[in-house]
Length: 287
Image 1 (cartoon, rainbow, N blue to C red):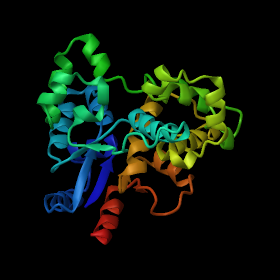
Image 2: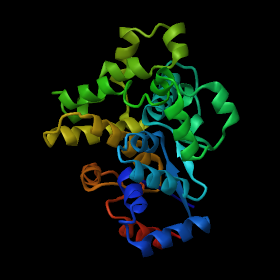
Image 3: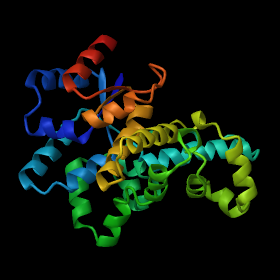
C-alpha cells in the first residue's frame, strides 16, 4: 500500500473541483481498492480552520472526510522529539528509547499530550467535520492547546534561518537539544552543558532524519533569501513528516524545489511531486 500525503493546496483543488476529474476518480479508485492510503495531519486541520470563506471551508471539510480509510501522522515536532529521544537514550547508556512510529490510527494520538486524555480515549478516528466542530466550540485555552503548531518549533527554526555557521554546523544548536531532550533525562540527570557538548560533538544527523530534512530545507530557504513567516512554519509542518515517512508527497512548486535540492539517495524518502497527475502516474507504476 502506498502512503500518499497531499499538501493542503491539492486538497483545496479537489474540493473546488479544480483538479482533473479523471485523475481524482483514478485516485479514489486506488484508495478504495486498498492500493493507496491517504495520510492526514494536524496541519490539514489548522489550515482548514484558517479558511475564511465558509463555502470553501465546507467543501474542504467534505473533501478531507471523503478520503478512504486515512491514517494520521504525528506532528513534526513530536517526531523529531522521538528521534532525538532514541538517540540520546543510546548516548547516555539507557538503551533504545521509544519506538519511532510516526503513524497513529487517530488524530488525537497524532498530537500527543496536547490532546485531552478524555478525547483520546473516546474518539479513535473522528471525522474532520466533527473534529473542527469540537475545536471551534472549545474554550480559547483548549483551542490553543490543540492547535499549538509552531509554538515550540519557532525559535529553533528562526535560529536555523539566521545561522551563519553553514549547513555542516546548523544542527549543532543547543536549542534543539534543550527543546527535545527526553523529560526523564531532563529531570533525572539534569542535562547540562558538558553532556550537551559531548552529545553534539558526536551527533550524527542521519540518525534523526526528520531533523536532518528540516535543517537542510530551511538552509536552502535561507540561501534563497527567505525569512521565516507563519506560512513557512505551516509548510514545514506538512513537508517534514510527509517527506521523511510517507511514500509519495504532493506539494506546491516552491517546497518541491527545495526538497529536490536535498540530493538525498533516491528511494530513501518520499517521492515528491508538485503535480497530482504526475504523482498518480508514478503510483500506478508502483502497484
